Length: 317
Image 1 (spheres, rainbow, N blue to C red):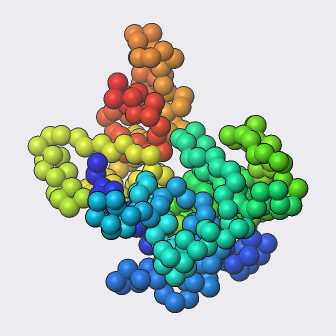
Image 2: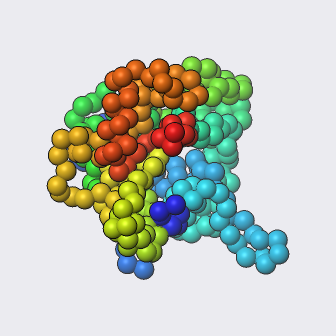
């Protein structure tokens, strides 16, 4: 692992109004020196932080042996919950928000590598209206948002995402919508089988998450390269985030690439989808086009981004 795995939300990007996003833009709140959020964050990022608290798999628990409070859950979920709790006034305030009747969790679709999002539904059982919150990879979440039909608004969001990823941030998006006359029991695992509407969500904002490189990785890469070893990074991160991290740790260079070297330097999971073998392994009967492509990939690739577990297996083969 090239990064520390110590994720921290450094940027909160709030949507002022989904209806006028293209005109009004988005409000960016950056964590200040010392790790604190500016006072304006509480108002600017109220919806963004509330949604991040409700739609979250992390928890703050007491250690049974020491009595100390510890954050548990995946590093990404913990980072978002800690940041959103801080914006709302601290862990106690976040806990009080979750305890409100209107924020009671009624249903959840956990994150998985296929959906690349998680969904929670909140409200009072038997109530006439509940709220669904959707968080995950921006390209997946935005497909369910009304703003997806507005090219100008989408360009604004994409521009903000590019800025974050250019700073080596991992970016997650979050959205919400009200559901009136909800079913007595929620069911489903995705758009194909949910018994409630999974469309027309209101885009709420973005989280910019930093996972800094481990100390010494950049010099270790140089030493390996000087010794004749080609270092390749394989990651589930977005290509732009992966590219920025790879440059920081000397796997990718800013200049000097052209032709196949430039084309194959960063390969995505989408690129790999049509290049995987039909069986479990490559055989001597692979199409010539695939053979040529993989020869170029293994020669020039420095980063494989947005890959799945099956992609990783194929890369190793």
